[in-house]
Length: 183
Picture 1 (cartoon, one colour):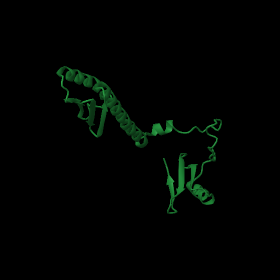
Picture 2 (cartoon, rainbow, N blue to C red; picture 1 turned 90 degrees about the vertical axis):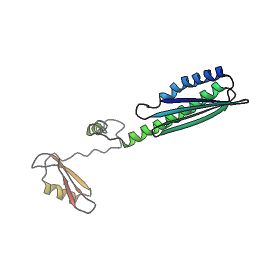
Picture 3 (cartoon, helix red, strand yellow; picture 1 turned 60 degrees about the horizontal axis):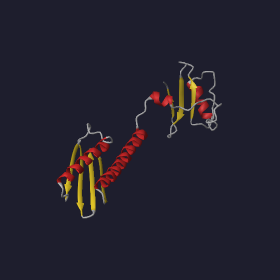
Picture 4 (cartoon, helix red, strand yellow; picture 1 turned 30 degrees about the vertical axis):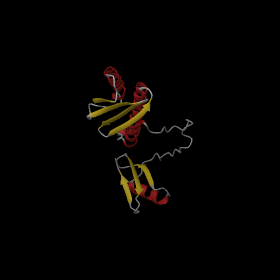
C-alpha cells in the first residue's frame, strides 16, 4: 500500500515530522481493512494548519473501494484520530456490504443444501408449521402416477417407479403438459 503524507502550513519542521510519523502509525489501522496484495491501493493524508484550525483529510483508493474523510479540530492528533475512525467505519460498511451480497448470491453446492435442510421430525417445536405427507409404500408405474396426478388437485406427484425402483416426480407444466423427472 502506497502511503503519502502531505503537510501544509506547518511552520516547525520537527512538528511536521512528528505529525507525519503519527499519521504513518495510524495508517496501519486502515491497512487491516484493505487487501493491498490483490489491488494496488493508495492512502493519502493531507494535514494542514490554519490559525487555530487543524485539518486532517484522508482518502483511500483500492480497486473498487473508495473512501474519504475530512476532520477539523484544534489539535492535529485528534483530527487524525477522528479521520481514521471515520475511514475505518466506511471501510467496514463497504466490506460488510460485499459479504452480505456474496452470502445472498453465493454458489451453494448440493451438500450445503442437504446440510441446511429442514428437519422432518414432527417432534421439534420449530417444525409445527410443516406438514409431512407420507408417500404410498407400493411402487407405481408412470401411467398410474399420471392418473393419480389427473385425479388429485396437486401440481405434482412423487412416486417410486415400479420399473426401476427409483424415486420419480411427474408434474404439470404451465402449458398443461405432463413432465416426468427421473434421477
